[in-house]
Length: 141
Image 1 (cartoon, rainbow, N blue to C red):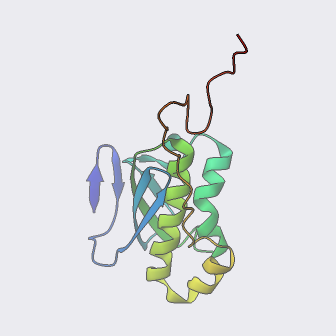
Image 2: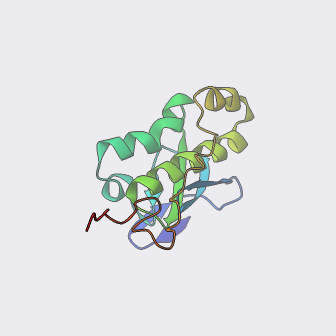
């Protein structure tokens, strides 16, 4: 049993499978264990952490694709980036942990490209420019 704050998830950690997901600058460490379908993110309820329906659907995509929504508990620790990046990092972490949990799910996850890392990041600002590519305004006089 892991007790963090007011939120408790049963289990001793021996049957846990781990997965790490990354997106932009967000990193999610995910634990998947047999359970009743509860999800905790940073010791808070899943619905409380991700308010947007789009972000919730993104996080649930690997569980719904493999039809394991009601059979596993998920414990997520996520940091860095913004909320959308964190949601996508959680999605990738869950997919990787599910692949470890049940290797037969890998083909379904790969078919829906849930195991592929989105490598796009913010381009750095260059000197003499306003942003990465935006130049200063042209002045005729």
